[in-house]
Length: 427
Image 1: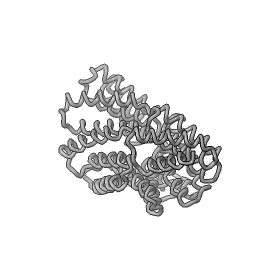
Image 2 (image 1 turned 60 degrees about the horizontal axis):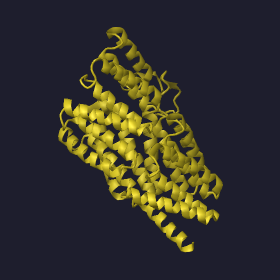
Image 3 (image 1 turned 90 degrees about the horizontal axis):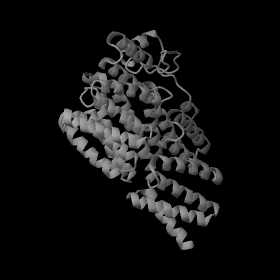
Image 4 (image 1 turned 180 degrees about the horizontal axis):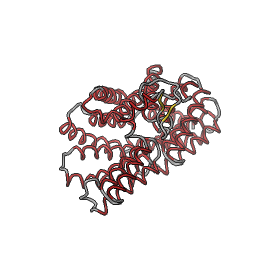
């Protein structure tokens, strides 16, 4: 397991590990100058130093409030966002939006695009009300400027669905995704990476309502489409994003295989995703942290509890640095640490982790959400084990109440119902 936690320093061009040369931006390693030169046309789109220079050059050539500066700011923001520097990304997007407002927001050609990506960023940061307001505003602008069934409208619907999904509004998210898939199939073709993105988001929603086989099928189809796109030289400008999309699909499939108990397959998918993320996004990216969390839970299922706990703590440290201490991704790692501690019989420590996770989920998502329901079930289970029957009963009732309110009927919701029946029978 230690070999997974160690940074393999993979060459961004040829995938050779153990490299010492790296770009001044500290994102990508190389085995030599030849590979660094060969990779530059690709890496310069992600290199924060190159993009900062592009902003500076645009200001000097066009003036600080020109559209070219807004575009350069937006590109720099995207690079920051991909690498987990969300505050820097927000500042870039806000500056780009300020320039658009000078030229007339809603009519400026870059305005809607900036609002879309700023909304997506706010969703990633857990600022869901701000995200949805920004995304819906962008949707109105794009429907007016580009038409009701334009590609940009379809892409914006994906972002709205992602925010709704994060809020636990799965049916609403699926409705938006159906509309997005129809538009993007019509505008881009059924096997375009954008359609794969829709399928991946559908898979996320289906997984969260317990439909694992349907979710897996969605992610497998998204993976197939993205693998085809990755080998298509006609869309080279999208290669980095497509590689990440491939890794995303692998990671999601790995998570589903874990829930299905197929541990060896799950770990293989996660490790394949980890290799891509490390090469394309760098060692300190949010994606690497997420894969660490997933592999840790595979190790937990294999009863390698000390190793699982070490990896989960590494993921927690990375997520706190990337997202801040009050993000739901941080809560997810705290919850996972609690699960491992409970397995080790450390019930008081586990409950402490669950309480911290519950507080973060509640601040981010409100009281009634699937994540809170799961944590309440875990609390009930641990209290039952520790002999606190009254506390277990209260937590089990709250878990079942929220699951029912959210319309969730997955395996954990059924376990919560079963535990509640057992506790009420013994009360």
